[in-house]
Image (cartoon, rainbow, N blue to C red; front, side, top):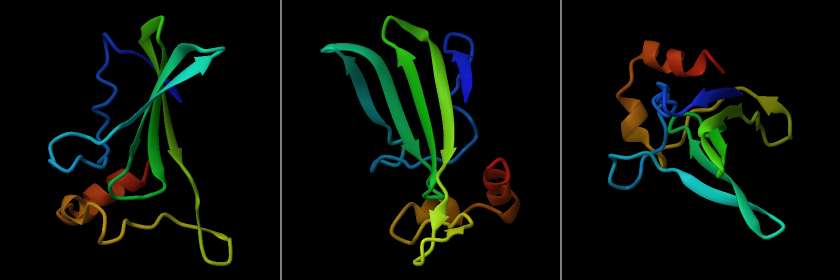
Length: 115
């Protein structure tokens, strides 16, 4: 987890390959607002890796102070059919294969190594 000042850091340009919208130009983000006693107070957005289905980035900020962003990188361990943890698995053909298929071995390792 990392805290950023959004006025000084472009935290979304982190070098990872995230799923794109159908237009293929912009990152597909899911957005939400958390309410406490009926008042919206926290904003969140989530993105999913286009290479590894278990890797996500979650960003949160207070609506009253949106300049400070908490960025959380999460790699949920994959499990096999018996429920045992296993290593990261590349996305299936049904996901953004065009995006990650053009990557070199070194670029793929660069995506996996920090995890």
